Length: 277
Image (tube, rainbow, N blue to C red; front, side):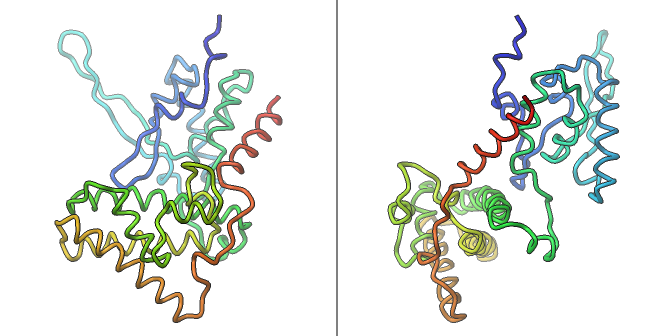
């Protein structure tokens, strides 16, 4: 019996890697096995086609297909260098578009890699042309990476209780509200992600809080947990004051989108699955 029937998106999550900057990537050799290719030569041809498509779309190929070499051990203590690539989500998506569509795993891969596939960088004009939901996906991805990087810096600053640390930032930005308070105000279900239920403007305010806290922790070489928490609160408060001075809308008064990003993802996945049937 073909085991592909038992495959879920977890097979792609299991081979996903995160670099030191919080960026996700996949290794071509590992992806090759999941996509049921037995020979590198055949899979490499597909990679080359994906690279051409990437270039034709005016993306920088070197940003999405990064050459990495590995040394493997052979018999009699011999070693050999083999080629591999670090692939972005977009690179993986281009690859699976050019794979054998008769394989059921390819349809699953198309769905998985299509969701949240975005440019790593957008010009102001391109960003302004996005829909509100596309802006939300883009900003949510940035906040996710920002929080990953902030957590590393915070840990080096002595933070052990990360819930308290992050709530300190929220309290500063949201006039004393914790993450739970924000979730209750937004009428979210238990443990539902508050960032997934924010509009693009609210996400941008939080991204600014995240990035500025990271910089302040680094610049002031903070090494005490209480000081780190205080810093996060002060940064959030200062951003709140700036919004007020500019006459902007306070973050707690910004509207909550009708659908969470998780709901939008499920809808997109369902549509892609139906289109592949």
